[in-house]
Image 1 (cartoon, helix red, strand yellow):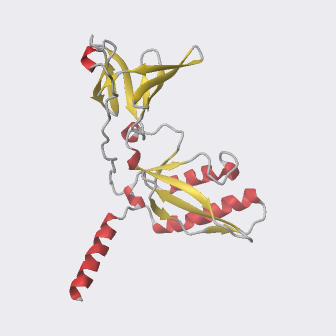
Image 2 (cartoon, helix red, strand yellow; image 1 turned 30 degrees about the vertical axis):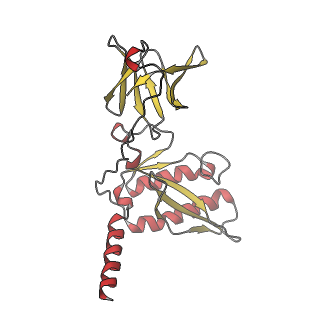
Image 3 (tube, rainbow, N blue to C red; image 1 turned 90 degrees about the horizontal axis):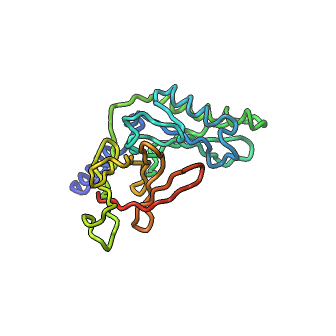
Length: 237
């Protein structure tokens, strides 16, 4: 009996240690449109969310903003913030939900409510009331840095050996991505990591575009003279 109690205690202790906290995150990401809304920043809810997160102490950004260079390639260093409605007949009720980069819930606020009948007043009031429990909790970033597990980038299959292909580009690691060089050697493109291993942003002297892996082939997409261009690239990582 004592042995079973000890095992349960150890499991509980390990679970507590593994539990993530809002204090582990410096950056908070807010969508420009919540799922229940009919338009971006409806009832100013996204603005209010970002304002309150900043007031708590987070460095808050909309999901379409450029992030600081130090976190640009580290999606797991951010906490993702959403607002959800709670079903109610007589009042407007909202809750603030925090999730990590794997879409696992870390924290949710207490339900904030408003009995005001006019939506443009009720929604902001309910949201601000939901944030009251988060302010009471007290946020203080503790310096934790989360990084996604490194993912292996596969070399596109080819019937011709890479070294025998004149148009082959070779990937050399740089900060947050790779530089692609030809056999000259000359840097042709620089590609930068995103949250998805099959998608890179691309920069060169002449283009800004995207590199996407489709059917195990790397496709470069960009605009030229206002027209979309799509090219297949052979890359050796």
